[in-house]
Length: 393
Image (tube, rainbow, N blue to C red; front, top):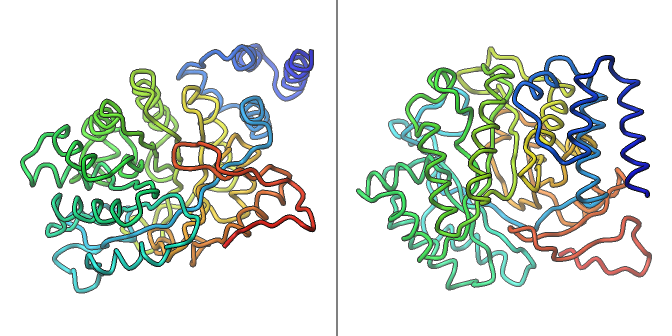
């Protein structure tokens, strides 16, 4: 009865937002857990108010998870920002020809980072960086193996499809052979980076020389077939239009129908500082929130929608929790530079668990610590009890 009342209320409220049958039809589909079309997604982008898409996205979010908001305790390792590729939107990497301007961590330095979290309740290490020609497949398999031996309980998530494509080609291995080698070493899942935008014409303008859409999708499909879960991303707010965004999300949605291997979808906001696309204006907060909302409505077969707080900033990440987002990533706990170098508000993108829990509580959501695969580790009360031991070290 409560669900019927909520559905009827949603339809009634939607009728006050917009005139016409199109939005009523979309709302009825959402209530019935039916998929919206690409044309309907375009209509939401172009014609729907922010209030309407926010209402619909939040309905989906709360129907699935209530007030639960997920995060994990993780840390990042960035092996290098030296890269053989020259993406126009990137503020982070330094071309191999100018590698003296960048950094390159040794095996010992990276293992020192891992050891610095000994006896701390982190559940994931995230490894991603530039594409360095001398840090090859064998080097990184050795790193993964050492981490697995040192701390078997730590979930190892690492290497974008861009990094993997380069490593596999250099090693003269097929995608399946390369991924199997990584899996044997202890790699458990892949991040979603490197997807950028799939449209070939836009991709040619922003990242022409790295793996294309078909290659990115093939790597992730192969990982899923090998039993490895992955994430998916989309870089938005640069040269693309709404049609390009929908095409990108549709390709991901189709692959998810086939493999069910994606954990979460992460829209990533383009930042324009210190790169070759500084003349391109950044999107507004309104546009950011609409992007999240439409993604939640369209990506019906993705269980989770993540707002990466170091990219958005803390307050906007909080706001996104009312526009379909149910996950804000993790503690990060290091000096991640990918977004701070591009002008993100978070110049020191690290939060303690206490800070993350407080951030979520401030907007009346329920903090839920998860592991990489979204198994619940711990649920924190919305209101902290005086005697409640958070154990947040």
